[in-house]
Image (cartoon, rainbow, N blue to C red):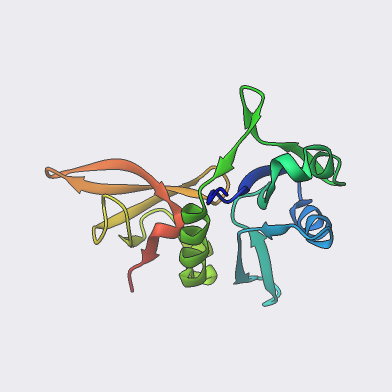
Length: 168
């Protein structure tokens, strides 16, 4: 008997603004789905909005051999199953756990308010505990460029957006 869990997290790409629709369809079929989101208050209306953290991307956990490609690929609103060299791309459970933990700590209001010149602190990774200057958002909202003082010079570094917090 094998101890290897056949369930894996697969990366899926939805059509624009169809992430929640795809997530709902897959969950209704009994698949475990992770759609990373963050909430923030709209500056104009004051209403709370929920946005995908990785626009167009979501993740589903299933047994590829048993469930098969057709059960997922033809989901309404899905653009494609992300893959490389004809094989579906899967992610380690630890990475999904890490994203879930980091997104729970994310203050969506602070996150959306970040603008060039803001002081931020890096929460994890090789620049953990560094204070830096926020430069800009990259790739939608999932990565940011910050300016870190290295040897007396401001150097642009790209880090996951969930790893920076606004310094009060």
